[in-house]
Image 1 (cartoon, helix red, strand yellow):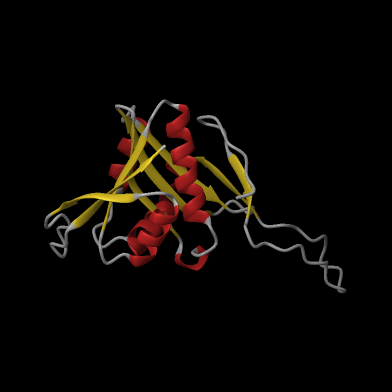
Image 2 (image 1 turned 60 degrees about the vertical axis):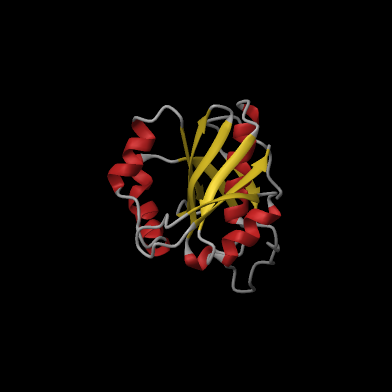
Amino acid sequence: MGGSRAQEGEPLVFKEPDAKLHPPSRRGAGPAFLKVFRIEPMLPRDLPEVMTIERATFPVPWTPENFLHEIHRNPFACNRVVRSVRGSVEGYASAWMVDREVRINNVAVREDSRRRGLGQALMRHLMDLGRMSGCTVATLEVRPSNSPALKLYAKLGFREVGRRKAYYTDTREDALVLQAPL
C-alpha cells in the first residue's frame, strides 16, 4: 500500500496506490505533489464529516452519540479516519478489540473517494493493530447484496463462517459472518 505500520495512536501515512507525479503547469501553479493520505485516531471534531459519510453509506446509520461513546467510553474501541493531504476525512473505520478478536463494526469511504484503496488501507490498519495487540482473528458482518464489500473482504482473506438470519432491521436481510486469520 506504500505505507508503514503504525503503533496505536500514531498516524499511518500512505501514498494513493495509483497516484502519479504530475509536473507543475506552465502557468506557475506551484510544485507537483503526490497525493498522500493519513490514517489517524478518530476525534470528536471529525464527527461532522464522519456523519456525512455514515448517512450516505448506511441505510440505518449510527448516531453521533454512538460514535462519541466509542471514542470516549468504550475501552475496547479502535476508531480511525483516513484523511487527505488537505485534512478532509475521506473515510473511517470502527472496531473493537476484545478477547483476541478484532470485531470490525463499520468501514466507509466517501463515494467520490472509493476504488482508490482507502477502505482496504483502513481494514489492513485495523488488522495490523489487532495483530500487534495479540488478536488472532478479525470478524465482521456484511449484507450478501454488498458485492463491492464482499470482494474487498475476500481480497483481505475473509471467509464466510456463518449467517445471521434477518439481521438488518431495514430490509430483514441476512448478514454473512466473515472471519480472517491475523
